[in-house]
Amino acid sequence: MDMQKWTELIKLSSQYQDLDFWKEFCAPESSDLSKKRFIPSLEQEKINAFLSTKEVYPRCDMYEAGGRIIIEAEVPGLEKDDIKVSLIHHDLVIKGKCSSFQNHFRYFLKERPSRTFEKKLTIPLPIDKNSIETSFTHGILSIILPIRDNGDEKVPIYMKKNDGTS
Image (cartoon, rainbow, N blue to C red; front, side):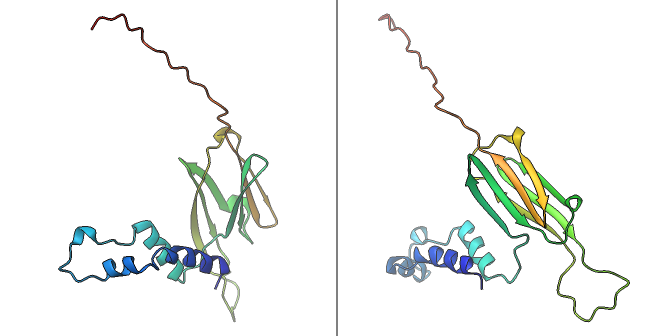
């Protein structure tokens, strides 16, 4: 299993290792239900994704370098026309279709599935949406998102004059 998945599970589970959590979580139904804590839905999704045997595709890296967020996605065997990239609010969506099946071959082993895919990545910082760049080399899709610099935006606040009347 992927080491990163184990690390994420350990981080996620560490908050549920205190005795108080388990006492409340496993309390009988007659106890005060308003005090019962449950695993939040986002964390439940992470747990389900961890336990799932479904492969994450495409595998991506997202990092900051030189005032830009760079996303690299592994999409071996695809052409740039097989992939669509879009930005919807704060989510970058990578969609595509990979087809490895050839009708005219007699397969003895077929491990690479034909499939459509969609991966959504939440962008953690504000970006300049008008300056996004992409490149595609050797099966690696690179998406470069310049980080928007809000600078030290100063907003003047004016005080009303108090003339003593109400």
